[in-house]
Structures are given as C-alpha cells and as structure tokens.
Image (cartoon, rainbow, N blue to C red):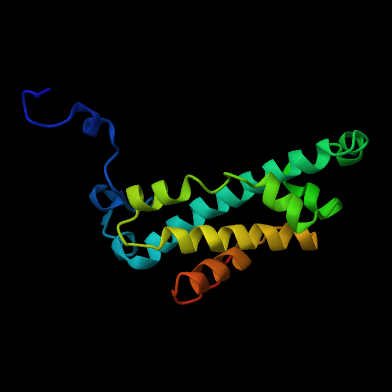
Length: 165
C-alpha cells in the first residue's frame, strides 16, 4: 500500500528521540543541551536499565517456579515479591535452566531494534543467563552494580559503578 506522503503511518506514533527533545532547566527555564544523550554511556545506561528489568522478570518467573514446587512456600514467602524466592530457596542449575527456558528470547529483538550501537546479542543473552543462574544457585539477591559489571565485562565495555542516593 502507498501512503499519500510516502511515510508509513506507524512511524508517526513513535516518540521523538531524546536528542530531539527540548530540555529546560527547572529553575531558570534556560534551554539545555545535555551532551550525555548522544553518548555511548547513555546508550549503555539504557541497555543496563532494560537488562535490569529483564533480570527482575526472569527472577520473578524463577520465583514462581520455586514457590510452586511446595505448597507451604506460598505461606512462607508471605508478602515478599516472588523475584526474591531464590534467596529463601536456592535451586539447582538444572532447575534454573528449565525454569528460565525462553526468558531471554526478546533480547536479540530489543538490541537489534533499539540499539544505535551494535551489541552482540548472543553474548548479552549468555551474560544475562549466567548472571541469573549464579544468583539463583547461590541464593544471592540481584544487585544493579553486579549486573552492570557483568554486562560491561561480557560486552567488552569499560566498567562503571551505579551511584544510588
């Protein structure tokens, strides 16, 4: 099908990139031009944020699997989120592999579609999978700095530390 102006109408639904947005100082309303928006570090921070969500969702899926294994665990976990279940009941590597089957299928699509820089999707999947395996088998909680280190190390990027307030 041909469109009157030659553009696909679906592209009109996309939000402008951060580079095109006007950013103003909240105090004086001066227009700012933040240099970090186009930097590789901004892209890496975005990648880290997406991977953080994927890890939490994978741990939640793992938690559902762990809690369902024994009926009494529903009472034991109480109001705790299911993404923490592995910290109460660590699982074997075989169970983790089975429970996380398909958890990373979206990673290549996300990296290929939204990444302005080329990241090796299979390496990113391997890093995420190994990270979650290590957390669940050891019963350790997820830590953003550990994930950042693993991603940067696995993808061959410089290492940095996430500062939280």
